[in-house]
Image 1 (cartoon, helix red, strand yellow):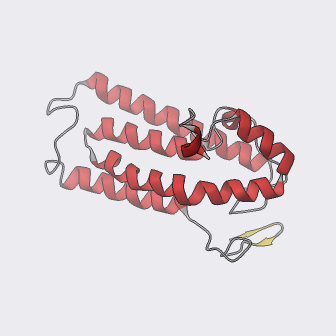
Image 2: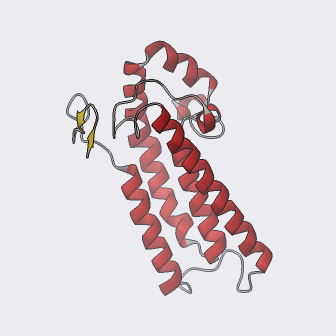
Image 3: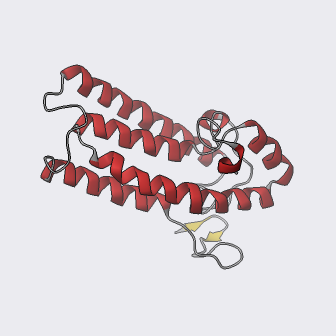
Length: 177
């Protein structure tokens, strides 16, 4: 993968390996869909055996909404000149569009997509796949991304991180930092 600024490094500044949260999410979600379809009876169906058309429609609507939120966040990143802090260099800190509500709209959208899939498939597998991924992103990926952004945009990052929550809401201070 390359950018206008040159090839993308396999490591972060300082030599740490570059995380791939999108690949981990796609793999986990694909596996959860396969398990939902192949082994649907292994776990209890969270919505019961008979799911109404209204529940499926709500799941589909949530899936579309989360997809649009994801697309909006990616478009804001492209306007800033990059794909993400690890994929390509960004020229500025993105604080517009979905980024005005959460510092991590792409991750929020991914979790919402899993919730929508759980409703659509009436399966707990997408929720179970999302839990370890969300922990990985929260504990391993986001701190590295935030450290990089704080280094690249110190003043802007300090203001932005004080005003906008990491997720859609603030956890207790010691958990969100």
